[in-house]
Image 1 (spheres, rainbow, N blue to C red):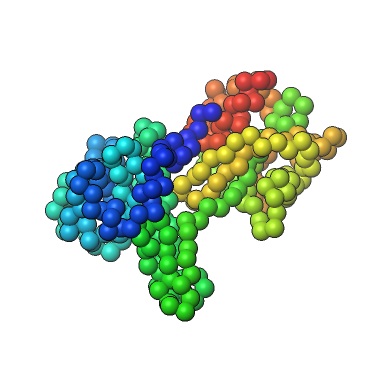
Image 2 (cartoon, rainbow, N blue to C red):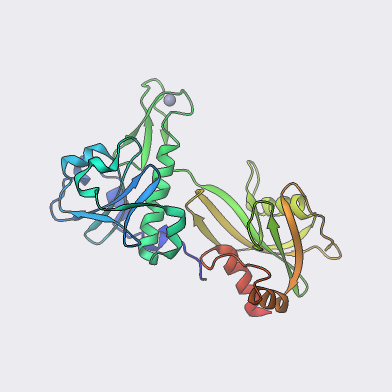
Length: 300
Ligand SMILES: [Zn+2]
């Protein structure tokens, strides 16, 4: 597989121990190195095209201006998300010389281990920003311990909230010696990829595969087999990758024009030739869609 399973690459045995520690304890070690990753108003602090990690043996008072969350550790290095949406970064002395970048534009160019930390930090950031208030009673939420869970501040509610992951499916559909590649209405250029969609409530992932494919291109499937998964940090989706075959004698495509611009059957030779000629654009190499397609190309 070529794709990046960002976070899981770096999960060490120690991480869970740190994640459940109280903030007071986590931020008062003197034999560890703290590596702070800064996200300010949704953008990441970088230097020379790399994320800037502020290294320190202690957590100074200046960090009180930020929300801190433990991300992961590599040995004695603790990686801490450090974010704010409310103060100007220029006011903080050690941040003056760095630039802010959109994470989406930079993540795929980073070295895998670093990308993994940034991806996990960004996911925590987004989840916390989207859960300022309790969904049950509307009171303010506060960080519990070191930021990996939130707790409603209303004493009669006290709802606890954990980081959210949304299951989605993506499927490579095979019909004899061809696969189906499609273009979503919102995609730029000539990008073609596998069909994908969210799992709905009360539905298995396999049911979601069947439903999405029928809704989008009117095909019925059989032999739906799970292959592998990938976490996608921008949307907190856990993409579950499948391969499936079209039910016999039902390969006529009926496009749902509200969602899909084009959908066609492609042979292995066509995909290789058209992508070489840049007439179609395949998904980026780190995406699970690329792995599903290239796995099939290697066998056909
Ligand atoms: Zn509440």
